[in-house]
Image 1 (cartoon, rainbow, N blue to C red):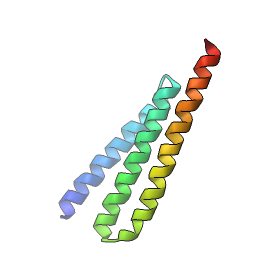
Image 2 (cartoon, rainbow, N blue to C red; image 1 turned 90 degrees about the vertical axis):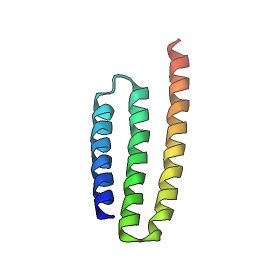
Image 3 (spheres, rainbow, N blue to C red; image 1 turned 135 degrees about the vertical axis):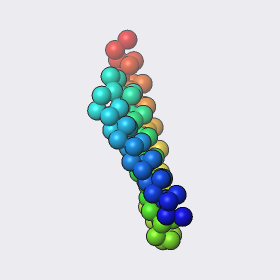
Image 4 (cartoon, helix red, strand yellow; image 1 turned 60 degrees about the vertical axis):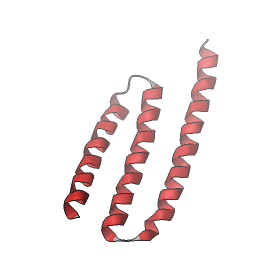
Length: 89
């Protein structure tokens, strides 16, 4: 089981690094918003892997709070971008 956890951790590390590169380099605000949402999902997956490795179910409320923050943040950014594009037109 430790090999699976190590592979999952390595894959999440690579995903986080690539997402951070898109977050820094993204040519538009929408690219950065999507990268931030993906980074939140990668962090939640990392916490899930850590919870499985430690056999600790107390991480689940943290995952729930992070998912709620990620959803509200994505919806807020999308709404902001819609109003911003209407002003430009």
